[in-house]
Image (cartoon, one colour):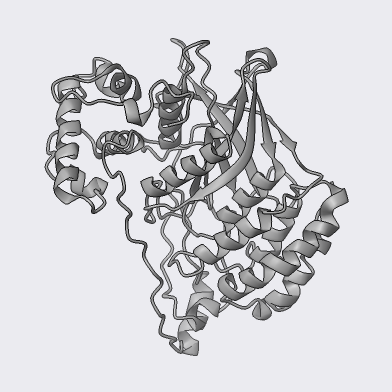
Length: 457
């Protein structure tokens, strides 16, 4: 944990018989008088996970393995949150590195013409189904990374039947999206300033995968000016599936080491919503609330930690530009409708800094990010169209969105750097399909013309 945390993992001590104040604060749902979530149940869950970790180390203790002996101990999500807390405090999985899945070779299959014509008549999509924690399609106008061409069949991808969209705003799902409120200007806890290079790196990371991505934000907080400065983004590996996204603890430790070496601290986290708006879910709100509690400053009670959501589909700004939201949570009041979430999410406006100079090592970081994701199973195909029945490819859309983060006076420098260092890698590793059937140019030609599609600002 960074220096502003109430207690560092090194100083965190476990008493097998009781829960200490940090545990009571971070896992408050077990200490709020709920009949099905008691302190005794928390202690049982925690002690069981520690025992399981001792039994399997140095292998990674997954949430599924940790839940195996915890029947009648509450819902799986609450148990998972205890698992995440113990990881953050380095009680379990310290030094364990989970295996990363590698892409399997796909067998090219020749589809017969009759099946393709039937699929076209039904309106089925050959591309992957994109989801925010659930493998469901959000809405018909959210066809991000979809293609009506036969490129998926050419690359051996199996067609999937469309499933009905889930009404995520109803029910008690932890994936339900909770609309953000707006702070009165004088009520904002602090001002937020985000570096343009960090925004561009997060934008790139969000486009590389069909599943959610996650990472940490490094920077500084100045209590005198009440300014939180996000200076760098550190993309983390994830032990995610198509239904959830967890930060790899080894990757989190590495991020904190890198930040500390540069005199920075962890000031936030980021993740993506591949096919949804940049609105936090109930789970996002819980994670943010837990981080803020651990970051609370004893001197003034300020919690200098923000959440950031990248939504590649965009829609609220210029065409093709990803939506990015910074959010913060506060406890609900007695009359507030918190829609089942434990805290209220608020949008925090932010100022973009560093727009007039591209950091020398930014393209190195981006190239490393692309190469490290090049053989993952759920990597995106940027040769596909950004949206159905439109000409822009996903690669063009990515270049437009990243370029938007910079001031106009460095656009030419940025374009030259991308053309030299980044575009060749994206074409090699992330352009598996072809846009020729839709009437577009090839991915190479399309990406060269991407700068001409940047919307006027």
